[in-house]
Image 1 (cartoon, rainbow, N blue to C red):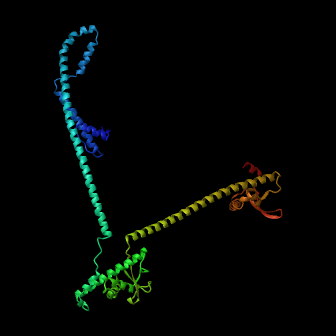
Image 2: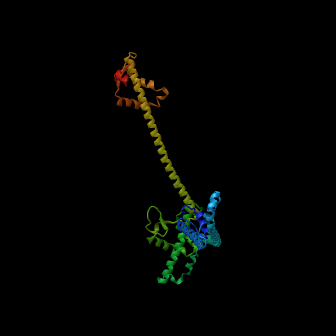
Image 3: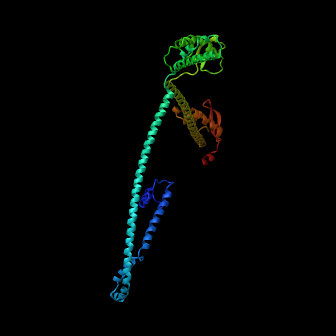
Length: 429
């Protein structure tokens, strides 16, 4: 039973009148136990109905005895006629019991089929209701998802763009009472502080916009991000006529403050710190106000620049690796060519020594340049000069059978190679 597939298990449970839910690894064992219990209950019901019937013997045995009686010989029929007549009454009772048992089984099966049909209809209706509920829940979840997405987009819009511009604070300076001039009471000092903060806020916004336009490359009337004091005063005068007269006090407060307020006071020498306001040249913002498009453009430029630097560094590394592999391959090729040339040099010097030993050559040694000219074609001598020098050095230092000497050949001094191994050993080798 454990080998049943999920579909076979579902069909078996529905056939016995049980409506199963989703079958998974965690519920499969539970449904297998349920199927065993339902099958055991069905078998017990059939056995109970059979035990309540009048006939308990098996009618197939009576039919088998009747078949044997019909197929017997005539003499045997005569001998067993009386015995059959005695058993005929008992067989009649058996047939009557078999018919009664069959009738009870049919009744039980019909009742069970009716119950199973009702259970199947209930199961189908429950499945349809579950599918309806799942469909409605899916629609509700989809609607909630769309609503949450709309709310999220609205919050992003509010945080990015804002619902509106803040109220102009410049007009508040006109609300300052005229009798506060020259007074030092608490109310007047609070009003003076509030107006200075409003002036600093306007100054900060103005410098941040100028610096942002300069950083983003937007056309502006200012040629640099550092704005001179007359230009700042003219801008503040367009907002409120009382701001320029209070600018010096606000700048003095910025100069004396140890907190970074986002406004940098630049002197005539930008490399030196400003000592007093007499040396003040211009002011600029330390936090430019960049638009969303400008931020994206700068981020893309920075990403492209970093990607190009990474690609360039990767290309340089690959180039170095390729050059190293090429160099290693060339060194291996030169080494193999050098060994091959040494082998040919040894063979040439040994053959010359054999010819001299047989009287075919006048001298027992070979000049090194003559061996080179004999082994290397003219078109390869310049290209293989390094390999030849390595082969000559290898023969001089590593080959004991060849000795390097200096002899005069045809009136000119040459370095020569002489074979030092006896001819008998050379032949055996």
